[in-house]
Image (cartoon, rainbow, N blue to C red; front, side, top):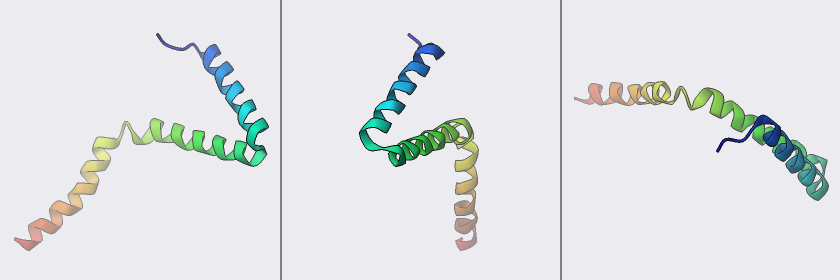
Length: 68
């Protein structure tokens, strides 16, 4: 079962209100920054993960070839 955008909006709004009332405005900003960082990670880093790991391990392969 997938959540509709309306239900996600309602739950997100409720979570924002609870965080604001419970912990204050500073914590609300921290939660929003964390959500933005998570969204950017899911949007850009996860789909490119094979290319990123290949790029990171390419340097290791270069060093092992020089030692031989």
